[in-house]
Image 1 (cartoon, one colour):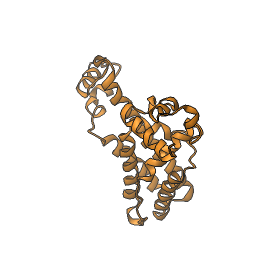
Image 2: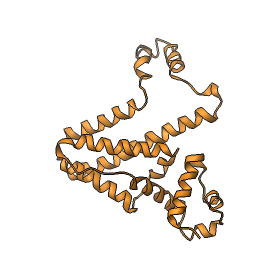
Image 3: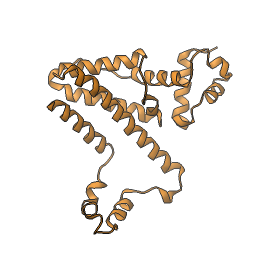
Image 4: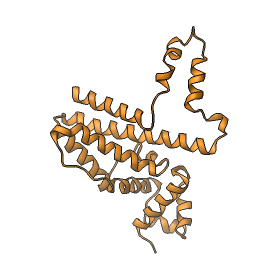
Length: 211
């Protein structure tokens, strides 16, 4: 027999190897050398498994003691850690979307983020919705990046545009229809590594601070 922890371990190994989209209950059961019926004795359904997976990722996140003077840096660090955890397992952030969290590790992270925001003087309702917005953006960013990486590996190379090619196509557009796009093609295609993630996160936190 196996435990719930072993189910989650095996599921994460599968996601790391083949991506979240390929994770099915049948495939997981096969990896555990059992049948689906035995698997359902440990997890209710795929949604239950998804929450367990996100809970496991949350368990790896250390939360700082709230510092009113550093609340923005602290929240940014939590989101960056989430991002890095998600990107270890291609596509897994999809599991966090539209989830109503009850897993204690997920709730623990929400509690820690709430404590940081409240310590920073953010109003309770603003703090509650900010957590949702920040984690939603982080999950969506990671999902988009995972999809792009997968396409770069599996799709016809002709359909995968690098930055130089995208810049060339933008500047080749009809000038009378797309004057701003052509003029600012460099800005539209700029950014290294996680520059856009950092910018968007900063934008959200700056806006929150001004409310």
